[in-house]
Image 1: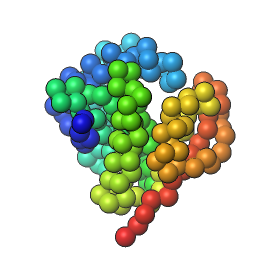
Image 2 (image 1 turned 30 degrees about the horizontal axis):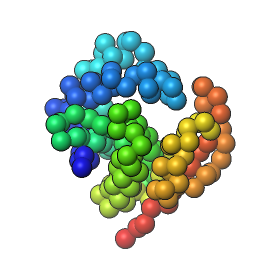
Image 3 (image 1 turned 90 degrees about the vertical axis):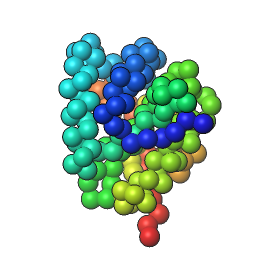
Image 4 (image 1 turned 90 degrees about the horizontal axis):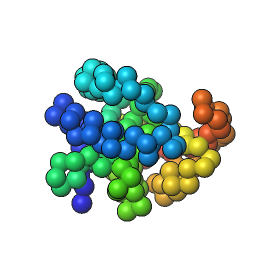
Length: 162
């Protein structure tokens, strides 16, 4: 079973490989990162780790048995006990329950380790897989809104405290 790990410097090469391998797959439901992002990956990775160290974000990777990355599950814009949840799973690992398991683990970490009280997430109306993961992990619809690519559905989840 893949292991959820907090992003570290040494994840860089595997994370870049994950993003390259899944670029076209992710672009079907998310804006493409663009060629410059891939060219400047090392600087981006360094900035992410610095922001994580400052407590602004918590980036997690789902690491397979061979050290390859099968997914990312991130807590973004941590403020006042709340954060945004963002996740993406490799195409070759999709439809195996990994996203649901990893999101559940990150929700537990969010409450117990990061002391968060609520999470929010968004997806496009046509992304049935993400909507299903959010529903299975306790998120409830909150509102409809618009993103750069068109409409999106927003979800929230209150986390247990104590």
